[in-house]
Length: 270
Image (cartoon, rainbow, N blue to C red; front, side):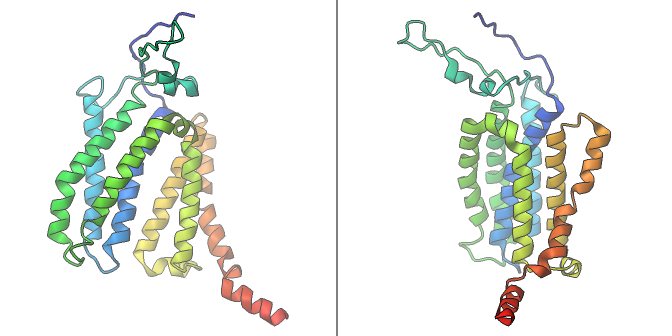
């Protein structure tokens, strides 16, 4: 069967943009997680670092779009994804004599595969240019060894994300909506349990808890929209009403699953 290599002239669909949005969110979410993890409860620098991380990823995304074809525009040309094998054309290089492999295949899902690597490279460069200066100026509440730990963490997770995209980009393309839903549900439950949130009043005690809750709701909504692919707008918007359901279910049932209560009731029963 003959194959013809053609230039990509189409535009990404809604699902393609949602996938790129997911891949763009990954480093930002990891930045925010490690900034919060290492900043300490009394540190006032966390907010500025969060904003800087958002600025880095936003500028990296804009620059990535500008340098992609067509150059200078916030739009890209792409080829339509038809099947999983489209992501791994390098596995289909021909061997006419069954000995010598001719490496001639091109990216069939252009630019969904390579554009993510370009974005991660810009994120890393901008982080190394901006974050150390900011942290050195404002992270006065942290020890010298703790100030740059969120940056060191990024130097670990960027290579991991790169390998993940290189090896599992096609799998992520089809599975990312479900990954978002599962991880956002699990992390929300873990956070509320660790923060000892059992009632609606507990949520209102600290603004940070509301920020975390609304952030997870946005991820829930993103996952639902990605699964539905916006094919039926009216029905899809109705599904967004389910976004608060997991948090409400947790708050309504948390008091019945408290370990101390279960142990005390068990002791009384005996």
